[in-house]
Length: 464
Image 1 (cartoon, rainbow, N blue to C red):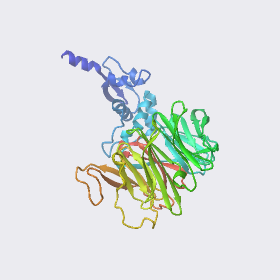
Image 2: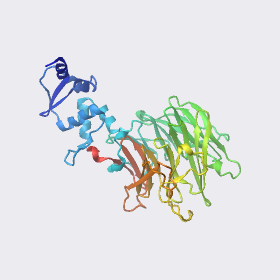
Image 3: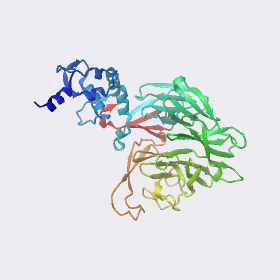
Image 4: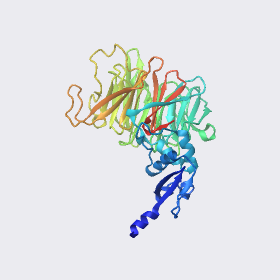
């Protein structure tokens, strides 16, 4: 036996868990940290240390320790694990943080295999008005009426705090356990500390020209900034304030509009804020419904220079909702009249009409019906999700390498494919009102339901 073989064997550790022998390396076990049981199992003698625990659960945790991911279920006969059992075992071995990271890893999100895995029930009679996944991708915060209910990363434990709002319309976790919350009928953006029972650390306000109070229309954030869309209580001015995320001190003001006469364009506050990391731009959008139709705007702002770099004013088939995808380098909208999903490439936003329809755009009068009314649109990873009644359309780009489809006016290499899922029998009563994504999960809210649906891929063999 040569020296390299001896060195290799001395690096191997054998562990007897519930009668099954596992072999791994010292380096793998020490990854668990000095305070964990696994690090204490690193021994130099050849006798396997015995641990009186479930070997199947240990194999899952050892795989997570080695790779950082949950193991895929290899066959239909593979055992399915309840997350409560894994939590209990991970705490015993001292590696709960590894389990949290693996369950909240976005790479584990499998959009083509999503299943409704759990229903999170809320206390009271109010339906969810806003949902915000935790910044670590594991837990969830839900605004319903004047309350905010928070679920931990396992979705097994929840706590509720009472706010000063009659109803919370905007909610965003800006750091672990700290929420930004606002309402359209109550002044100020409140920074709420959940660790201290919902204590309001501070209230941020916009000082408008008329010196009236200001209400919150939308909240967004980047790694550096917190963005808040305000409207004066008199509804004659609106603006977006930029705050330093770490200090919450004001940095700048953008998109300030004052209403003069009947100028409908300036009357529209921004109700959606999305940061585009690849471009260092803030996308803002807002729309207004009147007897003559729906009008709206989509603008991109350079926050540092306070310059608006692109704008489109929507009138013809204005959006019901709009989102932007960093991964796909595109803006997406769902037309309020047609109900179709469109995209505009971020590299060609200067075009007069940048929109390309992803579906079969119907040649008919758009004023007949507003088929896109109430549809919600969100992007996550390389996919775009659009709610249609009680169901969801999933749009994914397919790279074909073929020349564009002239009938759909799709540029070369940009073809999107649709998949539909989740539709319930009665779409009227079960209409989707909200979509949110965190880690490996999709969260869905429905009209008049006092609960949140959790959607997840079952292929990993973990049930929640």
